[in-house]
Length: 160
Image (cartoon, rainbow, N blue to C red; front, top):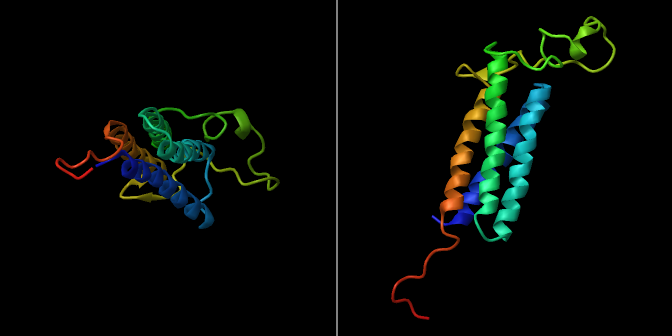
């Protein structure tokens, strides 16, 4: 397979994951701060994918792989926070000070979404876990794109 279809698949995968996140948000599953952090590398991967289609070389697909690896890593970290494997940021978890040290019973201001609470899961995996898994697959696709030839080699004996 050549590079361009792999780039489209990888950047398209990030677009689909973002679309899924926004659909869940529209259905009322509001994102926490760490959920929002996971979206930024997907946006970067989409932009990188567009650039990679226009620019020759392997640098852009490798950069796309880095973006996918970053969001996958954030997803793993978020999963660990949700499962209490390690502490999360005090600003968005129920255990620390930070932004949560005020009056939690106040009805003023926006609704606070905690990063250590799972709002939706499927097959025992949270949205953060699914993002980590699918983004890791996208890393592999980006790497395949970087390794793939830019175009199909000409057929032997083809007319010139």
